[in-house]
Length: 141
Image 1 (cartoon, rainbow, N blue to C red):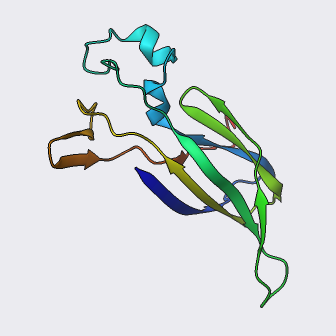
Image 2 (tube, helix red, strand yellow; image 1 turned 180 degrees about the vertical axis):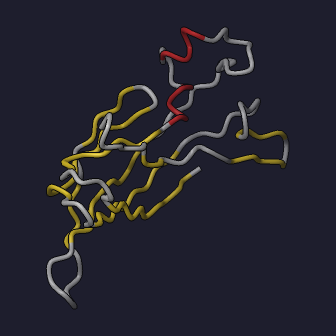
């Protein structure tokens, strides 16, 4: 399944942010993931032979240059860490400012499903399997 998303991330914290973390739970089904070591293969959260995970074809930040001028597209550095992905902003994001992230990815849909995703014949269930911003708070960062 190919999916595209534009994410508007507003920094509502008092800190200037240099990066954010996105939750990418579909990576739990990658071969040799931590999930595969914790849950037995045939269990509710087991991969059951399924080889999943995100494949990003685009992850850019659209940086506004001036009013009336098309934004500059800046590819972003990123690092996967199991079901989390660190994404470095193109420039530091000051409090109150908004970053616009433009992304495209694919992921296979498992036949057996695992909590709100999967397929069975013509029935597809897709939920909670899109990259979403992790919480940032000024107490724990």
